[in-house]
Image 1 (tube, helix red, strand yellow):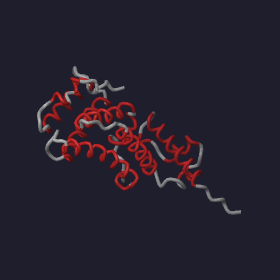
Image 2 (spheres, helix red, strand yellow):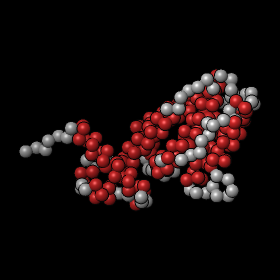
Image 3 (cartoon, one colour):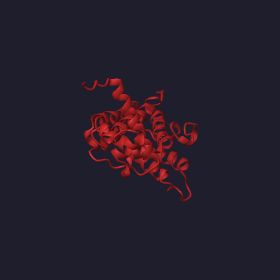
Image 4 (tube, helix red, strand yellow):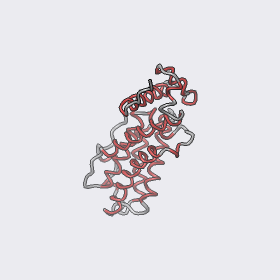
Length: 217
C-alpha cells in the first residue's frame, strides 16, 4: 500500500518542531557542532526523515533566520509614527537594539554567525528587506521634513553599523572599560544625527532631554 501523502499542515508542523529543536541546540551549544543527525536524534526521528523536509543544515537555519528577521521587522513596524520623523528614527534605533538585547541568540544567528549559502534563500532576503525598508522609510521621512540632509541610504547603513557595533560589543561583554551600553548609545546616536542634521537643533531629538531612551532589558 503506497504511503499516504502528508498534508501541508503536517509538513509545516514537522518543520516547525525540527527548527525549534535546532534553535534550542544552538542556544545551548555550538552552532558549528550541530548536525542534521544530531537534531533528528534530539527530536526523536531518523535523519533520513529529516532530509525529506530540509535539504541540509543551512536550509534549517535559513528558515530560522527568516523567522527572526520577520520578528525583528515586526518590532520595528510596531513603533508608531509621530509628528517628528527624527524622533521616530531614534525610537526605531532603540527598538532595533532592544530586540538584540531581548533575543541575543536570535540576533547572533542573524548577524554574527557565518552561514554557507546565506544569500541563496529568498525567504531570508525578503524578511531582511522588511527590516531595511522600515528604517529607510523613516529616514526618507526625516529628510522630506527637512530634519536631515544627505543620502538616506547612507545614513541608514551608518546607523545600522553604529547599532550593530555597539550591540555586538555589549553581547560579548566587552563594554567593561568604564562606560556601558545605556551610557554610550544615546550619546553616539545623538552625535550621528547631529552630523546629518540640517538644522543643528539638538533639542528636537536630544536623547538626554526626554524619556524615549529607556534602559535595555
